[in-house]
Length: 96
Image 1 (cartoon, rainbow, N blue to C red):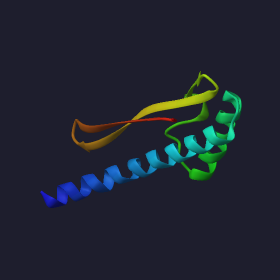
Image 2 (cartoon, rainbow, N blue to C red; image 1 turned 135 degrees about the horizontal axis):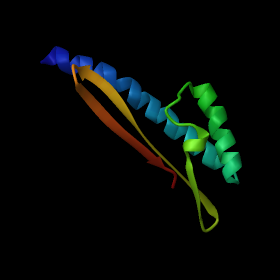
Image 3 (spheres, rainbow, N blue to C red; image 1 turned 180 degrees about the horizontal axis):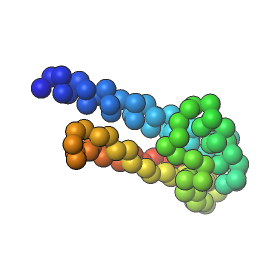
Image 4 (cartoon, rainbow, N blue to C red; image 1 turned 90 degrees about the vertical axis):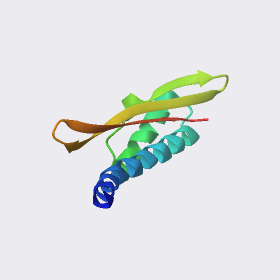
């Protein structure tokens, strides 16, 4: 049982690390960009440096709330467990 949990944790950990990288890239893009195009461009630069591919600049949903840009993303990761069994992790993030 402990070994199975260890293997599961080893498979989930990289997806959590990637999610954190996506969040950092999004926050940086929102801080530096003034328009949706600038936000997407800044995100793509961070994506190249951060070596993640779960989310691209075109996947970002960018809206305007008064004078601020709000950026959101959502994606899912499937982790094959055994046979027909998969673990589906749903990640989402939103700027404040």
